[in-house]
Length: 136
Figure 1 (cartoon, one colour):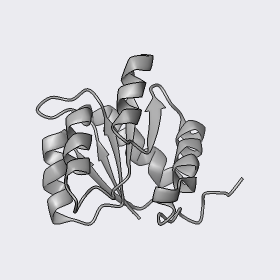
Figure 2 (spheres, helix red, strand yellow; figure 1 turned 45 degrees about the vertical axis):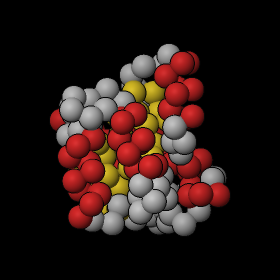
Figure 3 (cartoon, one colour; figure 1 turned 90 degrees about the vertical axis):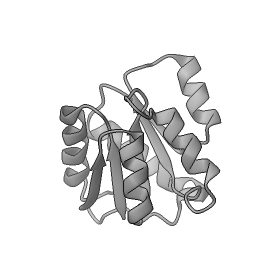
């Protein structure tokens, strides 16, 4: 499974990539904003997108809108990550049909739990977890 991590903050992006590797995910790509993400998605098969909400050029909401509006991309699940625990923002993200949501700060256990929940959703059951992720 190939995962695209989208965040304008290099430290956060690298922490997310590191945590995903610890969970056994090896096929990882990274983008600095929504515009960069769309460029990557147009050239590679991406199975899951984990994106920040607040970014320059094209934020996470705009990225999700473009993905869901494109029939060739709409099947790609998107998980949003933000430091904004505002219930209104979470509702907007869920209304945009994101597959999951993580509030910063988060840790390995939180990320693993959210990925497991995501993979149980009917629209995400085609995603295959790495062998290191337990089924509990």
